[in-house]
View (cartoon, rainbow, N blue to C red):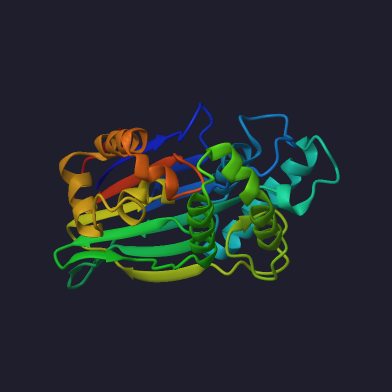
Length: 298
């Protein structure tokens, strides 16, 4: 097996995405996170580039510290979050942070359990999925490309519709458009942070996360492509690829080349300015290749 990864800030130097791969004793954990854009200029965490970047870095470290423990992915997420929540309370600059300012993030966690030797031969590797939010997982094998975690995000559709309405109204300035969208975005963030069963990773879940989980056999040959929605803009926002073409390009050209293409399109396409709330988003991906004994990180 081998992997490559890429992560790129959408604007400036603050990257609120995170990708990580942990290998140990026949188990590989592939982690993809996307911290949600802060909705206030006020910082509540002194350390780190931004509150969301602090959140994804802290949670990823807390999760890495418990990966060796027995238990389900759900239980390990809950254990890791105990540490993250305590750290946030210790470093937050304010004690009464409004819920729309609490950081949230997506989490796509794929655990690869390598096959064991059986009487009839080597058993296939297994994939265990734990997904919160709208990152994307594509599996490429001999039968084509499959979306392992189909998820229709109605809140994102609402944002895109609101952006289109503002553009139609003549509000093309990005800062003015953001100002108009902010009340809707803050209400959405408040709801995410106070939900009974949150669909994103948050600090104070009122109950169990509404994670999408799945277990399936891994292919003997093929590729798992895990990415944030900023990287997947190549498909669902800009239409430069479909799923199959994106997976093929990741194999043939590599992830860095795809990010370069994404940024070039966003910089040069006038049409892109009227599609999304942010002209450019953080973009990250991991390509894990089955059937190889080598590991590469780029």
